[in-house]
Each structure stands twice: as structure tokens, then as C-alpha cells.
Length: 219
Image (cartoon, rainbow, N blue to C red; front, side, top):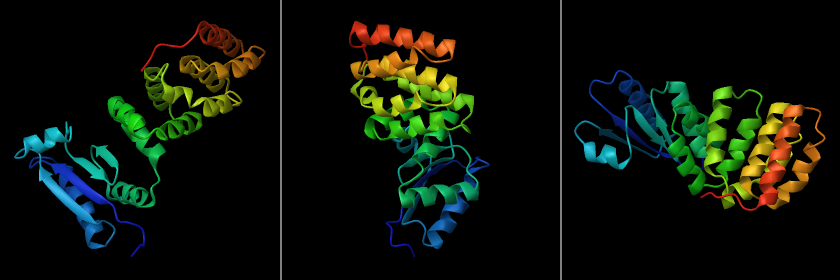
């Protein structure tokens, strides 16, 4: 057995749910094999207050360690989430899961509770394998944080993205720098005024205008 602390799991299910038994079976197997420290299963139909308390909107709803996961999970997915929870990794994957399931509110709450999640979002944004829908979701989250200390503190990571090979990523990174309201981003924006891509140059000019105008209003 691993010397690492074993994660606990919580599952909300319903009697007529086709996917719930598969998730329950995978979690129960992990518990028997010593990969989970505890497993609790709750009937969302007979315990609606508990479901509401955890903001459960649909079943199966699974929490493995810190990860709250909506929808069907294969046995392999359950195994991977248990491994991530045990090792304290997988935050980029979790962010992608929330975006894929259109749970931007939960992702925003996660960012505010765990600011380091923003670095995971930036890495996910820069990943060539990330689909456009994921980048759009990340953009929406960062735009919600316009003018906040959280986004201002992300400046080093955003500046690094302004050196990306992709012109679109350079443009988006510059846009986020403008939203941050951090005047230290002026140097990066000025450099992009000479970028080879006309869209990047245009965004850089807009960013400079924003940063020189003063703090961006945000949360």
C-alpha cells in the first residue's frame, strides 16, 4: 500500500441512473484494493437536501479527494482521478474537465480558493493539444478576473506566453495582460508593438492604452 494519504470518495447516485452503478462499482473496487481511504454513496433522490448542499445538479456526481466530477466516469477514469488525488497532481486535467462540462462558475470558485490553479490554466491554454473550446473557456475565466489581484499576480506567466510561437497565443496573452491592469506589463506590450503579426501589434497597442489609462475595474 502507498505511504501517501489515501483520498476519500463521495458519490451521489439515483436508482434509474444507467451510469451510476458503473461508477459505484469502480469506486468500491478501489476501496477494496486499498486505493481509497473511505467511500460514501448517497441516493440523491431520497436525500435531496444533501444533494443540494453539494450543488449536485445531475448524477452520477463524484468527488475524489479535491476533485468534484460530473457525469459518467469509466473505470479507467476513476483510477486516474484516484491516482491524481493521491499524488496531489492533475489540476490541469481538472480544469479541462470543468470547462468541458460547462462549469465555469465552479472553476472560478476553484481559482479563488486555490490561486495556483491560474498557473495550471495558463499552461493548459499554451498546450498545443488543448482544443479551441478549452481556450475559450479559459479566456472567459480570465476575463471574469479582470482588474483583480489574482490576474495581476499572473503577469510573469502571461509575459512568458507573449514569446509563444503561435501568434494567436501571443495576442491573447497580451490581451490578458491588459485586463490584469498591472502596469509592469507595459514592457511586454511595448515589445509586441514590433511583432511580425498585425493582430498581435493591434492588441499590443490596445493593451498599452489600457495599462496607461489606469487600473481596470474588476473583482
